[in-house]
Image (cartoon, rainbow, N blue to C red; front, side, top):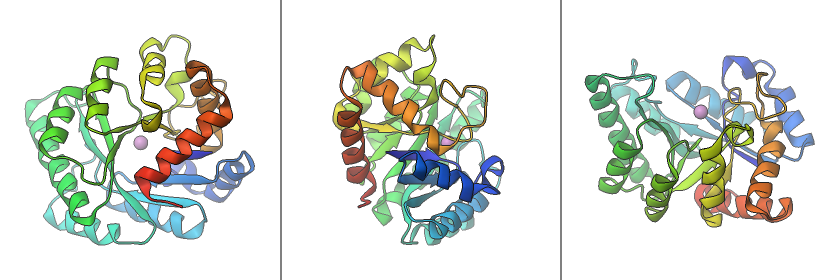
Length: 255
Ligand code: NI
């Protein structure tokens, strides 16, 4: 199994990362992508990727963490991205849930596009955070295609938008919320997602799946996500696991 999006570099997980990674491997999770959200967290992601087999890194500036960004910082991200264990630029994107003002949206768009261009220059895929911003994310990806592909992590848009993003070739990451009873649309999205575009992720330490809801999340909880996905789609867990693994390898070029 695999976790295409987790934050072992987060303060909640970092100190006990060896233990969390051991738990994950014992649970059958052999591949993890540790995702950065600014310069420091991106460096930590690379550090962890070098400490442990099966762990890879993504580097970039999250739309909620743009205080420290400028062209120099982006140049540093570019240098970090050349590391052999970096498999994506991320997480990058748009967040209109926590940011309501137009000037913030405009600023987020500028840096989202610059980071897409950076990924294209390095031939790396993108890990995208898009919250309450489907339409603008779609427009940007249409005008600035991710040449090496992209995943909409923790996909929380509508099913209609999912179909439009799928036509652009996007992958979709699903996590804890698909296991929540009242999560009607996330469940529908898992059913409608093309089988060759679906990915499992935890977004640990956030978004714990049932039965760990409310507790700290970690990559070993992928099993619950995979099981729920297989149930929703009416296929076996093994079939689901193979599909997700093929998608992961196709997007991140990891063997
Ligand atoms: Ni995340």
